[in-house]
Length: 305
Image (cartoon, rainbow, N blue to C red):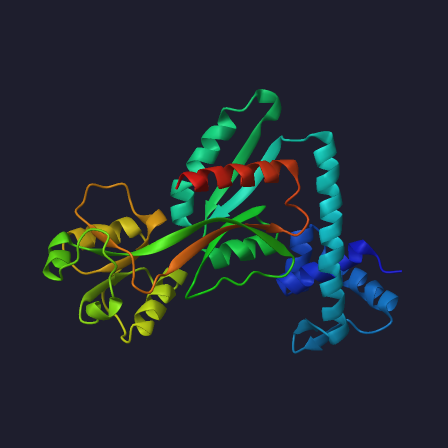
């Protein structure tokens, strides 16, 4: 019979890639990990790992076992969550990784609500700001309990196996212009903007290593041009400040708009682009009372926006 503890080690190896990293994540020694994997191979009756140079990779049988391990470990996590629900547990720490605008707009309200809870229901958040890809990787490696991520209609988000997601809100992407620029084009407040009209405009974008940058490339590409980028910053308050100085135009999700009095003319797109925000947890853990409570609070905060 296959041992669940050894399946967990194999699943961690598939996640972390090396015996040394797996041992560190599980607080074991590398020889202990190697020994348990060797026992697992004997239990399976077929090789589950093979050497590739100096590294190990999963065989077809190993990949099959990892897929089953995700299900088994998810079921165990669900059982633990259900038991915690029966105990009524709402204390402890929930680790959250969230992208910047969600961390700025959604998490402060959640934090405030948790701080106002009775002492007997004390629940603390640990927050780290991370781009969606990094947040999902941290979730996969069990470095966080909840990842708040996004995906665009022009750049759908793929989720790793062993995860389940809950939609929080749809966030429209707006074109930000200086009011004088909008007036020259005859765009009134809230008029829809055709991106093709801005093919010759200077563009202000996030850094190339962000999904928001790729969203802008795809949206402009669909309109038939490659944006001429004048400035890059992953801080949308910087981009909108530059727009307010008439340095160029920018695409900005509504949730990312700073609370500022700077003059901006904001317009939906004739070909709408939407950013969908999700709360993602590992399979089986969403029923944990503490995690479920945080997700419920995130939904309530999202509804306010």
